[in-house]
Each structure stands twice: as C-alpha cells, then as structure tokens.
Image (cartoon, rainbow, N blue to C red; front, side, top):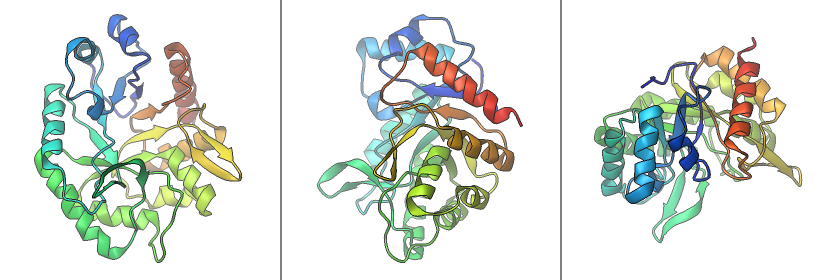
Length: 273
C-alpha cells in the first residue's frame, strides 16, 4: 500500500467507476480515492466486496455529508461511532466533513447551510468538534463550503475558521473552488482569504468546477475546472505548501480516463511554478 503524501492526487470514488476500479490493476495516476462513508458503512454483498478489493490497491479518504457540526441538535453519537468503526475497518486516516449545518429538528436537509459566523458560536462548535475527535481519535477535517446566504454581523470567514482551529486543533479541507465562488458572489478577494487561513492547518485540497447563472457562480462539481480556479490553486500551493489534491466531479461524470487526464493536467499546471 502506498501512503498518501503531500504530492498525492486523487479522485472521488463514484458508483459509475466502482466496478472498473475494483477489477483493473492500480492506476498509477491515481494516488488515493475519496468516498462518502455514509454510502458504504452499512452495506454488504457485492458492493462491499468491491470496496474491499479497491482498498487493497488505493489509500482511502472519507469525506462525510451528515455530521452537521454546526446545527442546534444533539450530536448523533451512534452515527459518529459507526463512522469510527468504518474508518478503522478500512484503515482510513483522514475523515472530513463540512463546516456547515444540514439538520433541523425534523431531520436532514437537502443542502449544506452556512453557520452564522459570530463569536458566540465559536465555543459551541469547538466543543462539538472536540467531542467528535475524542470518538474518532483523529483530527476532524472540516471543509469550507460554498454558500449563497449571509447573516448580519458576521466576522470574516477566515477569522471564524482560525478561531475554531485555535480551540480544537482540527484541520481544514481547503476547497479552492468554494473560495473562488464565494469571493465572486460575496465580493471579497480570494487571495486574501487564502493568506488568512492559518499555516499548517490544511490537511488536503479540493478543486472542482462551477457554472455562472444570472451573475451568480454556482458550485456544481459538474464541469471542468476553470483556469481562474487553477490560478488560485497555484497561489494556494505557494502559500500553504503542497498537500494532497482531490479533483471533485459529482455529476456529468466523464470516463475514468478523461477524469484522470484532467487531474493530471491540473496537477501539472499547479506545480509548474
């Protein structure tokens, strides 16, 4: 098994490619695969066998969807314990989710909603992060989300993230496309935000595509990555250093070969300093 290193590059494990990836020899252009643990941790049968075969060839990273670290409901401890068992079963070192909320008292929502970035919310979120970290015995890695709504009297996102890190020693999954999308939609400088994220806090990077609709940028994970985002990624690598890079593509999925070709193109462009 090859470990994930600071120069590793990967793609998401999607249902369209599972059988192919499980049956082919390891693709030397894919260093790791990212999956949503919620889609895997309660299944058996053929799909479980596919994952077991894949895990023999590729290191896995878990990127969750349901932690909802910023909501007002009690943490779902049985769910977190199931996550921990899945991580241990497949020897997964990195577990990430989103710095967001996605539940209310009626259940899970269909989107990731931003947390009000206010001083009084920092300790509450930090306590929840520390609880999760106590269970999983790993740093919790949290992704900065794309958001389309702002609350009144908020601190800058980079300041909010920095305060949470200082109270928890959690890590950041820095989504470069999300920063670019938010910067255009909310009128701030994406390069300044990159510089304001604490050094040594980044676990790995996401990069993805977006679309423009009625003067709004929408994070879709359904298109190739735009050059402006690649340029921002180059700056991010210069400032924060080389980290594992994950190309996200969730819809309009191309063939595995085409996806890997795009990954290699992005990786070469970023590292051509």
